[in-house]
Length: 243
Image 1 (cartoon, rainbow, N blue to C red):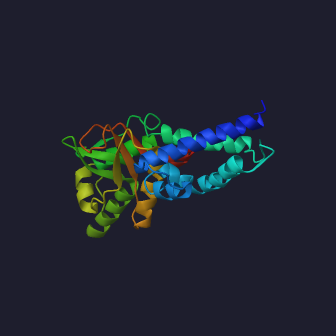
Image 2 (cartoon, helix red, strand yellow; image 1 turned 90 degrees about the vertical axis):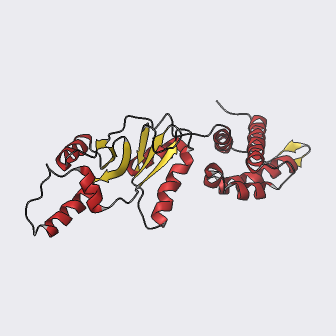
Image 3 (cartoon, rainbow, N blue to C red; image 1 turned 180 degrees about the vertical axis):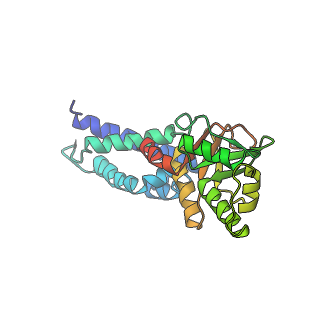
């Protein structure tokens, strides 16, 4: 069904006004500010605005053309259907941000610190996972990764002059102590904006470190039950959900 031109312009302006209002609310502003300024300042606080910053600048120019450029009182700058749908999507994301819940809530494979390395290898292999949180006395002591296991085996071979590594008698607690705990995880609440997730991974990368997983709990506290997990291989799904 073809969207009438006048309807496209009206919908565009309504979405534009919603975005402007939400940015002023985010910045706690009551007075008038130029749209460009609102975008630049809000982008520091909102991952949604940051993601669509350049689009919003273009929309500002289009809005001015719609409102001010007329011939005989008739609007001559008509937004396309695709532009209208996109700006409405941005407005919707600001009013009702996409959150990590419920999309990434799921049962998380967890391991006990008392488990032998052999069991961890078996469990990770069966689930095709490369990492799992490790708990000891209901407290998270680290995030075990396949790379940590390989590193531990290498250390053992060097220390033992290439003698056999015992996978059945070494606990995961011992592995974490031997390899070192590098805090390769970050906790978020179920209300965390999905748009902020890629930024967590990117910032760690820029720091020369690696974020292995984002762990989801009710309020983002480490002593709460795990409700979900987001790893590097989930990022394509994160980006699809943000489109």
